Image 1 (cartoon, one colour):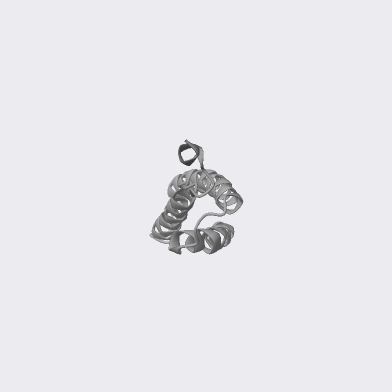
Image 2: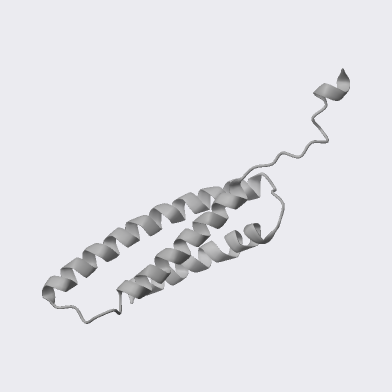
Amino acid sequence: MNDILDLEDKEISTNYRKWAFRCFLYLSILILFTFYIFPKHIPSSYELEELIKRIKIILIFGGVISLISFYFIFKMIKNKELKNYQYWFSIIGIPSCIILFTCLINY
């Protein structure tokens, strides 16, 4: 009976590392999409307004994804998940994507 209720040997597995890695991929895609939209053509006044609208939408998506990814990183570190490639890409990649995204938007 004690074997059934013994939970000390079991590892708790969560998917925070997987979701943080997905957020890293989403941020990378947003950055590539911004690089594709931004220098595509020299905008006229009407096209400049459309470009600013698109960049604002991309900024909103990037901000939401960044907040969600920081939540997943916090939960991932708190739960002491296994350290595989998803863990390291999330820990290193998401802050670097946010810095790159900020530099790109301020340019």
